[in-house]
Image (cartoon, rainbow, N blue to C red; front, side):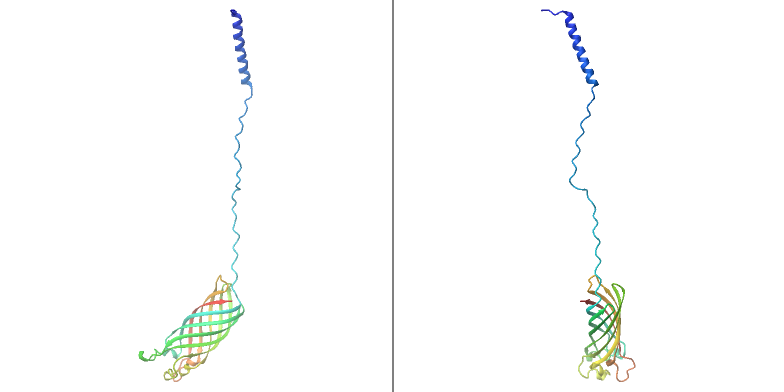
Length: 235
C-alpha cells in the first residue's frame, strides 16, 4: 500500500519537533555538581610535640664532717744550718683525722723524707738516710665557696734522722739522731670535687725542728719549709 505524501511529511515534522523539545528540556535542567573527592583519611600518628628534658639535679654538696684521710707529696727544704749538710729532699706526708664541723677538725700525721750528707762530705763518704716524723694538731677551715676552702693547721710532733749511731755527731748534728720536738703550722687551699668525698689541695708549711740545730757554732734556727700537693678523702 502506498503512503500518502502528506502523512510522511507530517511524521517527519513531528519527529523533528519531538527531538527539539527534548533537547531544550535537557538544556534547561540544572547541572548536578560533581561529587566531592573523598578527603584523605586522618593520620593515626599524633603530631610531634617537643618535650623538654627535666632539669638536671645539682650535684650533692661536699662532705664537711667525718673521718678524713689526706696524702701529700712534695719537697722538704732545710733553712737552718742543716742545709749545709743535707740537700733539699722529696717529702711524703699522711694525715688521718676527724672533722667535727665544716670549720674545725683534729688530725694525726706521719711523714718521711730522704736525703744525704753530700753537703759536707766527699762522694766517697756520703751517707744517705731517711728522716721520719709524726705528730698531730688542730685544723681550721674557711669556705670561700661551697667547693673552695682555705685551711690553717697547727701541729706538734717529733722528728729524727735514721742513721747509724754517731754518723752525724762529728758533723755537729748529734741530736738529729734521736727524736726531737718539732712544732709549726701549715696554710693551704682545697678544691672539692663533684664526688662529694674527694678534694685536691695545695699547701705550704713551716716548722721549727729543734733536734736539727747545729750544736757547736750554729747561728740559724733549725727551720724547715715544705710545699706539696694533696689529695683527701672524707668518709
